[in-house]
Length: 292
Ligand SMILES: [Zn+2]
Image (cartoon, rainbow, N blue to C red; front, side, top):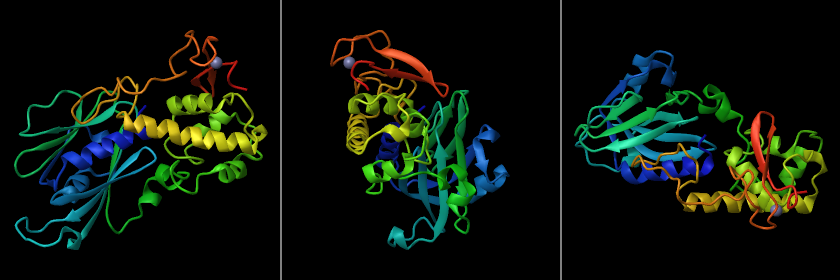
């Protein structure tokens, strides 16, 4: 599943490619991709004549700020346009966007298509179809309608996320530290790859009971999380095998992982073999010698 660095890479791509993209037409190829409003006609109508003004990210959610465009030829500062709510996307397992100048015939995994007046297309493709989209009218609350968004913990890069915060949230938790890192209500955007990589980098065993982790280790863990995520964003978002950027390219050439999917290979620090075991249903990779 795309994690924070992949979603951030997609966000940057969308920001670069979609200059003043005004949605003229929306085609929903698969109804279940539209999570809200429940009536897909309302989704289509709501998005028509919307300028995609700004792309944000929160955890693994992409959030487009929309502006209402009544007259395309009017010349005035875009920020003066009326808000038209938000388009929110969660890519889940296999969702990705493609920007196509002069639209072509869509593949069978195409779920939603957005067109501008010149027939340029922003296409959403999703093989396994777990991805979701919401159009949230400006009078509604994002965080109330999208429960997963409302309950998200702090962003790893925010000042709210530090060793003190971690100490406070884990102090009574008997769950493993790996399970804690995967919990989106504790910290937003970390999934299996970056949980394993951060714990390796901090020298902490993924199986440790969260409450047993000391303050100096939490400082190290926080730094490891931030470093691992920044490095991955810099390389265009991983290693993750199904990930596609806006050109339909696989990001699978940038960052080298240390433990993730390296079961049976030598640890880059000590030469011991990397092991794999499940924690709360997720494959966990670690070096038993380097991580205590
Ligand atoms: Zn090792």
